[in-house]
Length: 160
Image 1 (cartoon, rainbow, N blue to C red):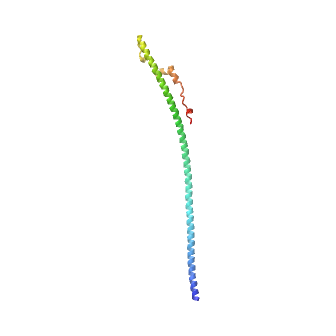
Image 2: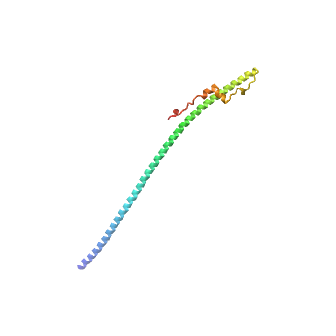
Image 3: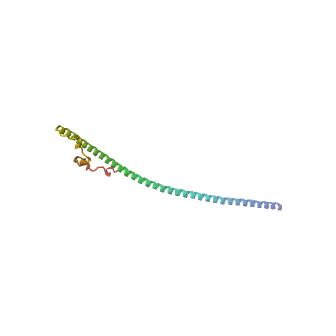
């Protein structure tokens, strides 16, 4: 029996040793897993920090773009308003020019009829004797009525 107990105590010792080795491997694996999990958490946190910084940067850029867009829109509206005023002034000046041309045409037509009646009385006048220069047109009361009128188009007419 002594031999069997000696054998069994010997085999128990090797079992103890193999359990000890297995236990050490388990502990080593657990430590390795803990370290791996810690590194994984650190990577996730670093990634999250990067994404948070990127969100902040994109928000900043978005605000800058919106500010720039608002300024550009305001410039566009100002220029559009100015263009509307200029178009109205151009139209008004075109009407004035047309009226002035009609007056000149009327005066020239009357000068021709005056020339034909004076020719009958043996007076020899030529059309160029009655034609006016731009300076004469300026002093002509018919023309000065148009020249002294203010242009009616203004920014107030085009407020949105």
